[in-house]
Length: 361
Image 1 (cartoon, rainbow, N blue to C red):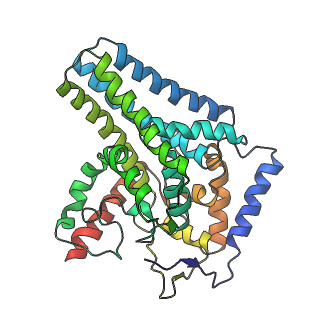
Image 2: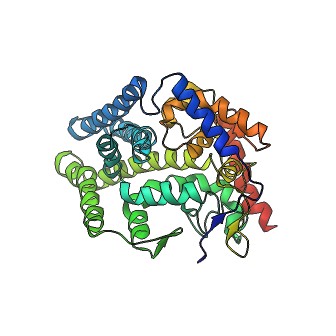
């Protein structure tokens, strides 16, 4: 699409102004910072130290192949959890009031396989603005021709079976991210609505940081670890598949579940909805009451709050969720939520089936 999308507030909805005022009042009345608290720092330390510890055990520990595969799975999962809990907040400038702290923690994205620079454009700018709009939201364009996430896209014979194979493809998310996606997004003419004009240093950084990642997870292990090439390939893919599956599942449960909408702009390129109301119709929560899920998912289980307030650290989402939900109900806006991870997973499965098999006929 070539038109610049615009959100038209046809109803003069004051929802966002109201909910923002109430959330701001919560923090000011309770004298709480919107950034990380001590519990957030402890959580960040847990995931970062756990990842480094697992990496060193794999690299330096003389373990059996079975033990190394188990550690590879855990390393992949911890890589995803670092992305959720540390880097995601940092790149949104939500972790700390100090931009240098955010920059350092956001940089870690590069060390777990994803370009922090490309992520900022694809996720912070494009996805958060054009959520669930086919042809504009990069997050629902993960495997064109293989997975159909929007009812506005054409459907093919293969996608009749996507509710079976999609979960397998999610496992490849980190493989493509580390070796293809960042390069493709960086060099394509546009990312969503954003024309790709990168500063010269960004070109150097893309390849330099990818080189560091390849050295840490390919070169150094092959040099130091007492394994042959096939054993390394099996272990490396196990690590990437574990990381990719966790990433793929958590991200899709927030936008491709029953109840979420996939708006179509009109001929003038306008979305007949206020931006905040659009977020409420295209985003869903899951396991909002679970402290365990919140601990591991880094607030991505409360995507409604995150999309409305991306610069608030996710550690505060449980506290403001009630404010957001009550305000949404007052303005007759949906507050889509699945009570558990399992119910969200089932809803996503049914959506895949509906968008594939049932749409094909």
